[in-house]
Image 1 (cartoon, chains in turn purple, red):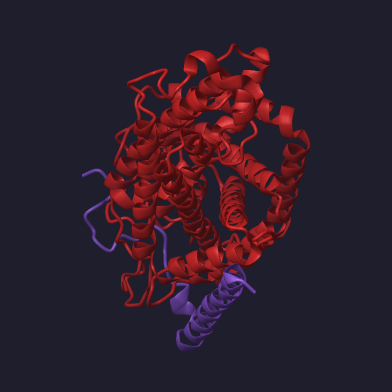
Image 2 (cartoon, rainbow over the protein chains, first blue to last red):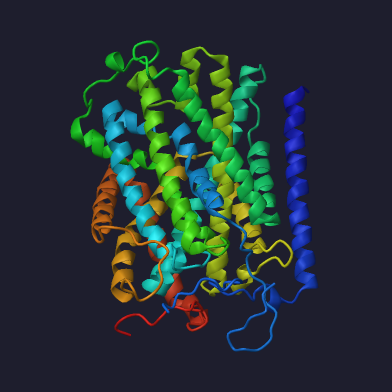
Length: 56
Length: 464
């Protein structure tokens, strides 16, 4: 086994860890927050109100 | 978190985070595209010769300049994730919006898969040069997708700041190569006088080269996907998009000039990594290293931008119930469309595991081309329904309707060019979108809440 083989295993391992981290976090968020809140965003909502489409 | 409600009731809401500026928009657009200067564009040389490739470079450059101008105007008023999907929804209607959303998701996810494949192949070739034959590229393909998805999951500001740095580095590597071959001293390293020939396949070859000329610019329209996350959409999106297309026109011309001055067109038309090969021909180890890093960074930046854009398009379709609402969720801490990002990971990995780089990229280009064909019609309807002065625009593109007409004509020509090379794939793609449209019309559309999808404070369109 040379260095490149180790890189291959390391790449599999790191990928698995990252994917598991995201899955774990997503499950935790789904459990801790209501579905209504998580899907509450609306398009075009500007938190700063400096831009308006209506001409004044 | 935002707590405003259109009904006036106190209700907590979460939305995507508005933290981006024009530089991030530039990084998103140019980052997706720049890999096309390092590979892919050179197949146009194989079709039309070096001069044919230059004609394709500039004609397709004109197509994308029209795309950038039209997109900048429309998206400076549509401050919504989803980009062209959101534009189509407001201006043309639900079926067009559904199709445009699918074009975007397919184009970006397949491009992401192709980019990850490139990273895997690059590492395999490096391992081969260092004496390790048959390196398995798959773990590096998965690592590329997983690491970039993780970055996207954790927040848009860091994602696009990283993209800015690596895209700028990749662009600088092209400039360094250009200066390294001493363009002010023709004949010293650049041999255009000897290498440039007439059109080897005549003008039909030039037309056939158009489909690969798209590689120089494919994805610049992705800047629109940041509309809901930029601090000032009306200012940042036009600045980022227009500076992006200017950067690409310069990079494309420099790329063509250097590569055609160092490599004969017969070789260039088939090369896998033409700029890296050009650097090898110079004999400079420093330039080789620069170009290897540039190629790798460009592929990573492209995949990173594609994850960002595909997830925003999918998220927007979920939020409007064009897809299940579940996908329209925002992460309460990172403020990203985390479910859309997660959902698209296995799809991208599946595409990349096929190993069919040319097929994957062809389907990506075809989806992009379908999206460009929608734009001129969209522009005409936008100016007709909301004439100048009816809503505030961050940018008004000049010479309307000339850019829309030019864009439509160039799209038709490029369809013909694509049909010459990939007729079966073109027809298969059309069939896929027709079946998807039937599914949406007869099944999915009943779940869409028609009033809820329009929440932007636009004035009523003229004639309604």
